[in-house]
Length: 559
Ligand code: ZN
Image (tube, rainbow, N blue to C red; front, side):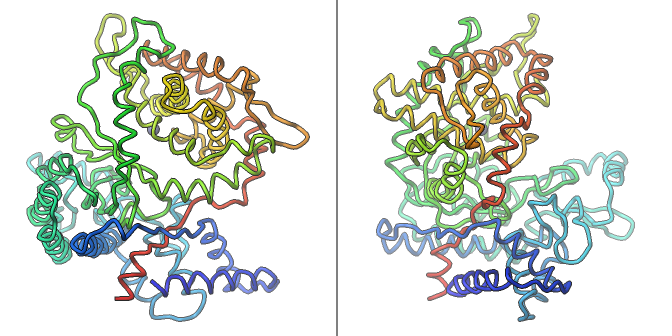
């Protein structure tokens, strides 16, 4: 990983010298374009506390790191059939344009820019919609037609864990365990070697079952085992999970891994929150008849520090928290586990949120922007997804908020979680779990965070939810815009009552399952208002995301 440091240093030198270069040869223009794209991501060292680890833990961690590297390789193949060829070509060339391309290729896991709707930045070929999960020339109708004529194939063809290929005139489904056999066997061996050194029985069990799943293609049992991992320091999830990369059908799962160490002190905090869930529900600004005290199985939340991540989870924008597994059968039996990546929060706070705050906030309130407020809001946001209306009754018929609100659901649900993230943290202050001084930090830090979220677009649920909150509170004078300085601030006098009002509106729309009202509300408030546009413009030059530089890469390359 020393090499990684060197590359970053050389590139920043190049960018300094080239920014004064007025030459416009096509090659230089191209390099400048790639440099600018790379510069959208600010490098951050992802360190971890080696003193927490015993000698055996260190071996386990190393084996899991090596297995994760294999997830990087498999994912690269899943994204695009020509990825390996392109990468080898770039690697063998030592001119600067190729090195820059290779660097961005590695960040994007392929020649397509994930920040620019997958526009190619090497060559001109567009990204196949079905990535490398299907034959590149196959269109949707061919696949659905095949299933219609061969209903017995449906289960294997739509499975998350098969790739579709041509065999003469036919389409065939090949299980991952066969298609990626060499790599998965290697990964399975590493997981078993890690399990051998593992003192924690529940983790050992997960690793052994996951190794078996790589060979049998059946992930169910190991997903259950992951839910049961407890009293562990090393928290790892590895395998095929999310299906977003499959732009054709969202069927096929991409390989990834998160290798992390659990933060017990922070995880404890969540246990305290968990005990207040019913009281939070009782405290909601919502008519009594709509309150929901019959929530199902509990979903554990753990706080961890990331050591390494691989594959799908590393390409493009970095994940702050995840909620797995996705298998509904596991969710029915056990629920799901939310994992919060604390050091990634720290990095995004320092490198993204603080610089935004400095530009958009009134100077007098800058001092209230704190990491604790940022992190606790995310924690409470996640908890708050678990309160409020879920199963509801509309015109005497039992239904779900999700079904009734259709495409408006995600935006309103994210909006609710952000509102209640603040509302319930204030509740915890009233319960004396937090000190009173925390209140101003919560309000102001959230306001700065609005501008981190709306940058990803208000069409996206989180961005839209944040725009609603901002525009509503601005209209109520709970946020105030300074025309002269082009900054915003919180009006501490009125913010709580205005937020309570907004919470009541959103929760009541959900409880009533009122689709029309949801639509009107979103049309009115989830917009890029003049103030949002002015402030977005002001921060447009700031980095979009972080770029992890892993300590463990460095250590392992040294050895
Ligand atoms: Zn959320």
